[in-house]
Length: 250
Figure (cartoon, rainbow, N blue to C red):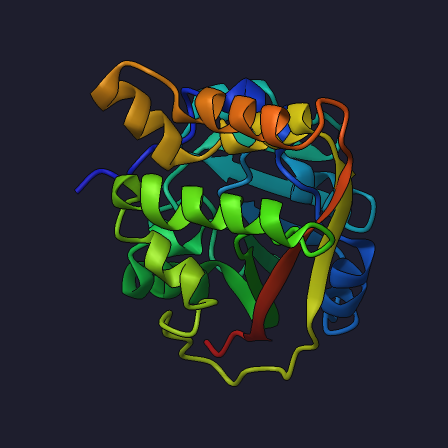
């Protein structure tokens, strides 16, 4: 079965509005890496993870199933982008010191992916994958409540089933390796309604809604927020990050 591509349509928005992961996350991961020769960023999207890896590794391979995503990706001399499924790659055996997956493993065939990384990972290589949950607007409880209603009620039926892994903080994803205890991380930003609108338009559920209904629910929701609160309101948003990491046993 072909992998799902839910992000080509909004690839340019993805590059502009998706949140970026904190340096503390990478610093934690890197302390468990033995060598910094070769890294693979799987489902790289716009290359935001590959960009950081390239600052620390000699060579970074970055793959995705969406050419449009790769067309919007960050470029560097030691990053090589190519189209590839997560479960079947062109890489040689025992190639990588680190394998990363940011906000994407819930789309994979887990068993096939784990078999593939056992093949292409060096002995004692590290696998690290993470995701982030639904944003919170704690400073404005009423606005947060309006957002949660949009997420849980208006748009919830348009998510693919894989979204459940995000809502369960990846606890439902098998991990056939010895896990490294991980701390909690988060991403925090000060946004206005333009930034909130841009981010929501990256959601695969929103794109599915548009395809089925011919109109954009985000436009209506954000306009209602502007009218209810203030056009130029700024507010802090936070995204909880959940990380799984472990050494790959060959």
